[in-house]
Amino acid sequence: MKRFRDHIPSVIRPDVIPTSDGMVITELDSVPGGIGLTACLSHLYADHVDEPPVLVGGRDGMVRGFASLLEYRRSSRSGCVALVVSDEAKDYRPEMTWMAGQLTRIGLETYSVEPRQIRFTEDGLRLSAGDRDIPIALIYRFFELFDLPNIPKSELVQYSAKKDKVAVTPPYKPALEEKSAFALLHHPALQPFWRGELGEETFLHLTTVMPRTWILDPAPIPPSATIPGLSLGGRAVMHWGELAAATQKERHYVIKPSGFSELAWGSRGVSVGHDLSQIEWTAAITKALDAFHRTPHVLQEFHKGRQYHLDYFDPSTGEIRTMAGRARLSPYYFVAGEKIELAGILATVCPADKKVIHGMTDAVMVPCVSVQDHVQ
Image (cartoon, rainbow, N blue to C red; front, side, top):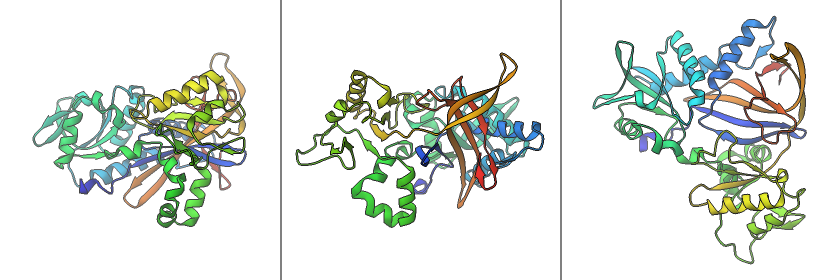
């Protein structure tokens, strides 16, 4: 609809890998987890560390920034904010419940709810809080669009948004939840468009930090054509089947679902080429091509993260230990109209032998600080 045409996600989180050659952005997440976790960790480090360094965003940056974008999206509507967390994303309910409490504490009445707790009326959406029946002014959609068929009352929420009875963010825009955007950025036919829209400097910067990516489309490729920018051993690749014959050194690539799949988040569904046997790599390519019409996959260059040494507390022994690991930085950008705020950065450090970096039992997760104009 026209009134939603210019809406973009209110929270944008790139996944940034520090490498020996600089920073690399592997994904852009418009429905990211970790908002409450990063906010809570910022409170803990600011409150319990003697003379703490300056946290990116400060102690309350995540809470204030999130409140700012929610108030902007709520606009003049009366009622509360509902953080709607699906069953698929149920692991994030504790952090969103914590965040709802913090938002309410600073004056923005907010509840973390399951979709089935929402009640539909002709006048709008409502929810019950104790003995109160409260109108909902804004829904923060903490579920991805592939999950819509499993969301109770999802059609009623969309109907209410269509009739302007409630505001919803992120907007219902499938393209913004696809990893194929990276492939479109690098597509040679679109380069004049990107240069014109972004400007030469921004375009060159983005194509440097965003790895080359290709959509694994099984459509036949003419015999006289090659896949733009893709080569093996110095020779151009003319069809996807050639990838199957790549040596382990040649297949420093990642295959992952682009979107609209329960495997497209949380690092599930990811295949790291040089970490697989030849048979497993060939099977991953075949599976991705076969799934194109249901769940498109992308092929992306793999960039190895720098190794860091991090001290952490081991609760099983009560000792401080040192872990060699690789990091993923998750900066949270909150968008409220023309105002874009970097509210905090969460670092996830996984053991050095892990190829894919994500939240896991072996990981250390800490907020980042600013040190002499650099981030740590």
